[in-house]
Length: 364
Image (tube, rainbow, N blue to C red; front, side):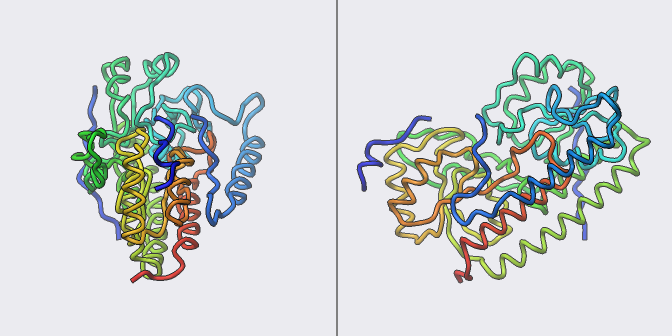
């Protein structure tokens, strides 16, 4: 084992689920990929094109861009009731469903660059805007730890739409590799909340959100159903692309930064052996890095796959020690403040391009 490990690293057809319950109640690293990176030029051009067209369509004095909690301007009446999304992926889904009707001012409670909001702490201005919100959409499954605290300032009649209600889950990945003395989070026995990165499950999440929006805006129910069907058609197309990937590239073993891509890996036929982090937002110890290096060599791991907020230096050290490539996979948990409506679809396809380059042949 090299001295770099001993020295340690820096600290720190359509299936519909049963209706879900409606319960009252850092800057991000560049998404460019370190290995075999497909350029983001198409997405960037799409964003610029969307902003240009939107600026022509808006009345004088209107602005295209984030406002408050990254409000989605779209075609929404500024006086429309607020719908606050507690994480970036469900914000993307809610924006898609709202488009063309604009019955809600769809806002993001976190910052667009936050990523998985495991440790997000809302600021006073965020809580102030929540006092004027009657509808909240959450990913659920414990992803938005801050929400239980934040919701206390919301009106007593606020409705929380749980996007993951009834969605099939996997057990959280923490605990796949255990090191004495490291944190042993209870999350290791809880459902993995990163269901949004599977198109198959994202389709079910969007159905929950559409149902919740229809309950708040009954006159728009047909609109939300039509937008949902368009989204689900896109998800079915992505599922077919993932199935094609699985036929060609299945069987590779990988290590990930944390459980962010467990559901996607399952869809792609990849096997995740361990996580770099022992717990959310916790840096690996030198002992963990050493054990990971042994695992990578012994099990012939093909790549280390990170989310954009992971510790790149530690992962690159592991890659140098073992000779395996290190790459960043975008989980669509962060992005621009005014993304195009199909941003999620674009991100997933770019991820597929990257992974196809990393795993060019069928390992089995």
